[in-house]
Image (cartoon, rainbow over all chains, first blue to last red; front, side):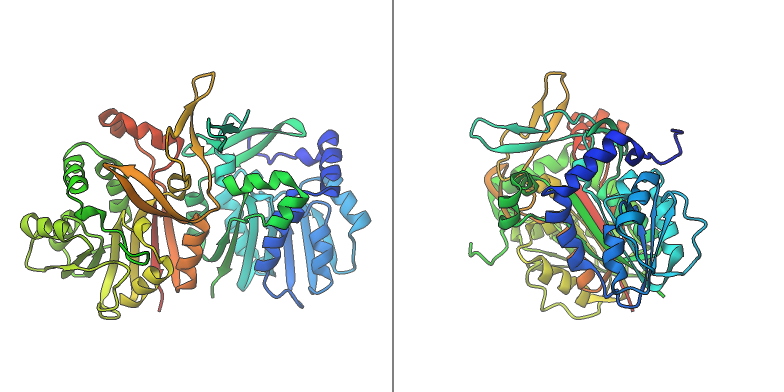
Length: 249
Length: 249
């Protein structure tokens, strides 16, 4: 992988199989991130939607029932093969495209640019957000979730939680002010995330002409924690952050 | 102090004396927060400025050299006495007013609403931001700094840093998702800060009609760390966050 190319970890077979297995079980996406994203979703009836990092296409299929058209892009050929098999519809188009390289997409074509948990893989965030702005129609919406900067901050991710003498659990935070690559063990040894400060994310959105409308750091409810105990850690520190932003006139 | 009244810790004599003493020495305000605020300051020549939580008036005096008028408000009578003594000018008006209670200030009167490290004391953030919006002229700017939500998160603030076996220093983060009062020891035993998630701050600004333009989490430079070693901890986790937002037409 070259320095300036997005990581394509989802085409790693071990990673892919483990990820697909995880998504079958109770998981953070279904219990925490997706419910929050749904609440923030604008009206999609009759709209043209771009889903960046669409993965195996679950969201694309769901959008396609109401939307006029859905374009799903992903860097992973393996993911798109699965998407075309299990989540296809006449108004969905899947394209093998990195989010770093959306120049071939036509300008002012989408009412909604949507992305679930992909932007923390982007190497060039400014370029990505500029592309999102370019492909949106006037008054179009960008809605994306990504790993929370608190979660991506620390370079050393061993034993991330400590318990004090009174039994309180703390999350070990470090390196917040140093943006850049973070090497994480997630199914396989070296998944690369990009750490960006929340102030950078906000400023890049604004400088590219977006008006932020809402920001959410999803908090698990009691029912969700009953289903998946690990979610309780999201009361200590948030895993995700979601932004909804408007492209003005 | 009633539940719904802002804390007036600056009128506590022990706190006041310790604070004034701190501000004489090398400190986080002068080396980290104020340089960042200066970079974000709009053109103030001939402008009308409101400084919320103006303290002893150092910023008011500085603004007054260029601005048309400066209004400094603070809940602390002791602070304002000092301000009137050492930082007065013909175009500065100091008023003893809580930021929770700005109803007596006239609408659409200021080009800039400025606040340095006061908003984390506000009990009702929504009301505060709504007031800021009301008193600003069209195209006016709100520029404020406050404690970073990462810093205000943990309820237990004993031994906030831990060192692992390899000597790396971590900040202990907890309770991020639980907004509300935080009791901090700072000169005196029980200074009350309000913890709000960054997503809440952003969303309240947007819902009240502000367009966020820039956000900064100041990072200390090498020269500053040489002067005050404690600043190195701001490489691990940010102490402050600064927002610049526009009141649109």
